Structure formats: C-alpha cells, structure tokens
Length: 295
Image (cartoon, rainbow, N blue to C red):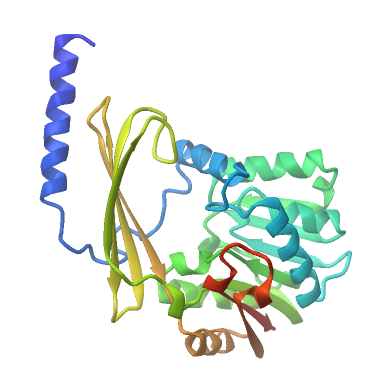
C-alpha cells in the first residue's frame, strides 16, 4: 500500500470510529428495514457457507435435527406423495429437496441468490429437479394467489424478521395460496424464553459472515418492552479499507395467544401450538413454539 492509499484508509478509519462513537443510543426498530442484506450477492454467498456448515446450527439445523423435524412435519401436515408444498424462506432447499425426495411437489421462495442457486443444484443432484421450483424473491412480493398448495412451511423464526403489519400480510397471502384443509407450520421463538437482557460484544476475524478480509465486529442487543421486540445492531469495521457497515436485525416476538389470534384473523380456522417441538431432540427445542394451522 502506497503512502496516499495508507492515508486514505486511515482517514476512513478515523471517520468510522467517530460514527461509532456518535451512534444513536437506542436505534429505532425497523428504521433500516430490520433485516439482513439477504439479496446482496457477496453476503448471500457467505451466508450460504454458514447454512452448509454442519459444525453448528446457527443458520440451518444440523442433518440429524432436520431429519427429526421432517418426520414430524410429514406427520403433522398429513403430507403424501404428490401433494404441493410451499416453502417460504426456503434457504438452500435443505427441507424442500428432502420433501421432494419423499414425492412432494415443492415451491421454495427465498431472497438469497446464492441459496436459490444451491437449492437448484441440490435438486438436480438428488434427481428431483422436476418436482422442485425455486424462486429468488422477497417473500412479501410473492404472487401465488389461488395456487392450491396442500401445505406451507415458515421455519426457524423467519416470520419474526418482519414487522407485525408485514407478518399479517404475509400470513394472509399464504392462506390465499392454500387449498381448504391445507396446513401451515410456523416456527417462532417462545416469547417467555427470549433473552430480554441488553448486551454488547465485540470480536475480530479474517473471514466470516461479515467479510473475507480482516474486520472488527461490534454488536449490541436491545429489548423494546412495549413492542416486545429485540433488535441487534452490528457495526462492521473493515480494517483494510476503513469502510463501516451498520446492519440492524429486528426480531418481533409473539405471545402464544397473540399468534393464535393473528393466524385465525388471516384465514386459518384451527391453530394448534406445540411447545418445544413436542420434545424433539433439537439442541434448542425448548426455545421454540411451532404452530400448525389449518386453512
């Protein structure tokens, strides 16, 4: 790095540190969208690595847990070969392709280009591409009205990354795309189990979710009692360039009675909550409530 470039980076680092120092004490929920940059190609590729890393379950659950979930879902959704399934926020297709292997016709929708590309490759490799359709799209913009799906999935807390109004609209849209008697499963964090303590942390890394060059990660977690919402603010300082990225991730929690009412109001006649995945052998099962709703 020549002297001019070195001074430029130093200037950017100086500006970034002042931005960190002057950050708002408590960010406003949803002000920056409240979600990760799923459709950014580079972030999408790095997130895919996390989805496929079987050493942890932070992005996608590990294979034995997925298999236990899939068996449970097959039973609770009363699935059969030939039925049509909608996988909302399908990620890299790990559930969708397995359901297709069992004979279902699956449509998966996700905002991540890398995840959708991998799902298509996985379906091809498993010989079920004829039973899988994958669409890269913001699920809030799906156009699936009157598709007559027999079942739909919305797993791993993904409904919580949308505001209440967006969540309501999304549930209503899913209901419209399902046949009468079809079933939807929604997995959400148990509001009673959510960590409501505010916290801060930091670490450095050379490669990871936030970049493939040295960076400093500063994290903060806030709890908004009135909204019953947690917000994580990530400040990522890229040390080789001085670039500072700020990402805010909102997680809207729901009490069980509120979610039951919301699902009934958006077109589902019967809703049954299952605490802790009915004691399935998942490492964090106790933190979740799984809702099974009939259209």
